[in-house]
View 1 (cartoon, rainbow, N blue to C red):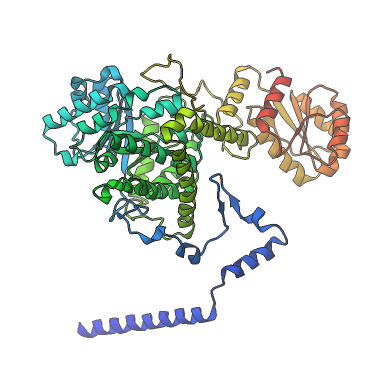
View 2: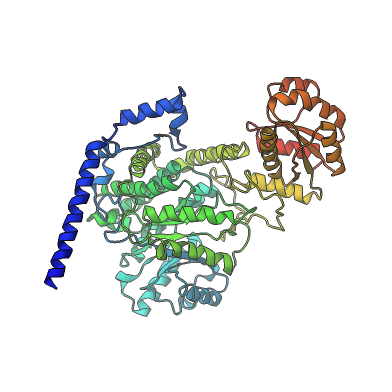
Length: 635
């Protein structure tokens, strides 16, 4: 036995020596290229093209991203210096894992039914429940029924009700916890109390509710893990805010509550421990990972200025919610791809809990199937991908560390700007926050209209034959009512796909589905490419598109189109050949259908002079063009 072990050790040592020699040899034969050498090589490959225009990404967040990063770029940064679980928590709040709570929210209309659903969900991987309780259902009796059978020491319980009823709910919950004999240290949960959200989103004057904040904290002061002041920055995300805007305003929003609480006499450690952030997750995968790291770091620095008793008060508690802004009604299963990458970002970014919205949540009440899929999206990340096992999995990535630092710079600028304006509440009253978010939303809608921002399945590669089948976007319902006049500016919330969906539904409801026939002729590669482009373009409005292999003459193509009952004929060829084919085809058609040229050929002015007025190409505003075509077709 001893002999065998010795042989094994010798073999292992020999193998190690061989590998060591190989590594040493490789290192001596291949020198690591410098950054300048990489840049020189890229410049050669660009063949004279401008490096900054072709290779440097100018982000929506206000900074540039280089095509590559190296160790030397990260060595100058401060973000890698701290450890997980240590101030300023850029690397996460935990030291030994990356666990997050899988949360699902329940709208309560019947307390017994809501309780039964909650109990069922707890057997399916959920460990955080959110109850949306109407104000007229806030009572001790209803809370008893709602929480029956739920061990609040093992399950996070969150509540959302009318802000006017939140204090009453807090007292009821404390009485319930005491009646059950729960250990106060073990109760994890929250009450979503955020009157400032009503001001910034709805424009309603909710300032009279702000003095309730210290009262809420006082009621729940003995429950260290139960939070009762919320920053609902997810509302900004769902209104189209970019990452810097959402995070910068979220920090200023949270600081507003910190100021008000401490000025009311609440000790800073207690005040910070009662604030929770509900943040959205956009589709920008790596940037979102960096966002959550940056938010934790900056929030820790903000709270530190209030001189709390311990650094643990500086931890940011984030519940992340997948965005509704980029969700669609048409081709709605694509929403699964969107929410999955968003969930991955939040998990890798180290959030406290997460809500993955069902793929159908923007147009109907989600059913068991869609809710199950949404839950499983998180469970897959845990049970199969093990995202919960590695602490700060993004650490050391040159790219993400650089994004974290760059985001921190821009977010901090916005935070300081808001503070210079008198704080978040004052900025909201003045309307500067709302104006900023509305401007971004309008900018993004314009980009979507021109297909500079893609919405897969809606403004790019739509499902040609899909019908709405009665789908309609869900509208917001508020228990406080909507009759009061607004005292301040509000945010115009609309999903990015709204305009295209409304356009497509208007075509569908007209009872007339225009047929668009591709008259493909000439150069094979160009006619195929332009036919595909035109089919995608026109199908965004729900038009029926008919592609073809090609015609030998324009007369043959026009005759085939009219025989097919075409309302639109799109000639698809090369730029050079349009001078030969377009005008004869237009004249032969003689107004019997709308005529479109696919592309923007050099001879466009000549074609326009001949009476051709419709062109589709990459520089078109797709939305406005399709609206114009609808008008011409009598839709």
